[in-house]
Image 1: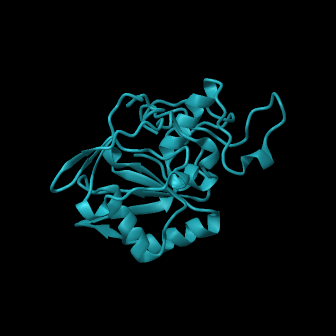
Image 2 (image 1 turned 90 degrees about the vertical axis):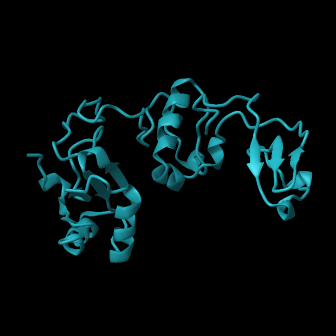
Image 3 (image 1 turned 45 degrees about the vertical axis):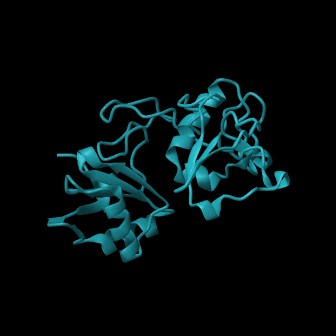
Length: 220
């Protein structure tokens, strides 16, 4: 992933820190093309230069990436869009069964990177983003839940923990901590409505959160 982002190159040394008992030789047949080998191993007692000459992977191996992983890791969508625009093969695992006809746009939406929070971007249809919508998306769907009044020092892990404890884990969470809000994306409107009912009165720290269906929420 860092290669695709331009953060590292094939000359960047790879270093790992382990205990001495964890240093073992791995049979060559167990190493796949997407595996990253290390140049240096640091243990409590020594520094090992591996001298490995195996080529490092030069980017994301897209056919190893599932649709579920794309949904859970937002940065993958941005990187995939960038590489698709560059003409690279970004076919996902199992996606060959649903390839679009030649010349037609793929139906899987791809994020093209973050935009400023208050700057609208191009939409996939003519519907404008509603004031309560996550940025870059269309009007709030019935399956989206707005969570507001988040404490300023709240981390996304705090909200995720509370959702797990209440049994209201969404398919995806859009975090907007600086604006003290988040959007929870559920599979259907019934699940979203159930989550709204379940999360009423939820408190993080000393603050009671505001919870509503996203399409009903409007910024003041």
